Image (cartoon, one colour):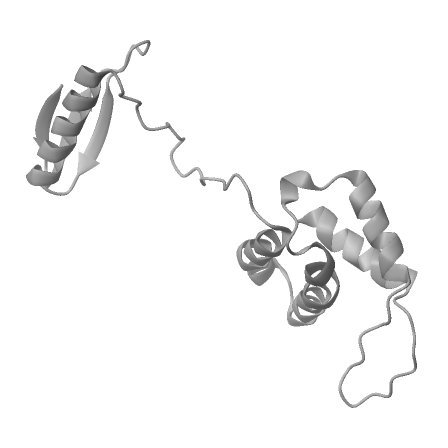
Length: 157
């Protein structure tokens, strides 16, 4: 294991068992690099050293357990703001807020099955439609067309 200076930063270089190429970790100060070097030495001496997980440059770390609410929020922030027009954006966020989040929001994405989604669509057809302020409540139910829009949104996400 070694520490070397590269420009204004420092690198800790060490080898991991089973890997041909040595690992490097960058640090802003020499003190941080020295502390990390000591941590690696101590962990190797105790036999408890586990190197950090490698990711490709620019790769996004995925959360293991993410709820549908958080996933759709992230989807709208990453994709919707860039690709959708004002009308489609407001319609999609309204569908998420009024239809998806109350029923699926607290479920984990990994736990959803085709059966769950099918039951959700069937449940939606029996729910009352959202009444927009300024309009009368006619007691209408959510239509198949609206369920189709929700399906299109969830599928694209």
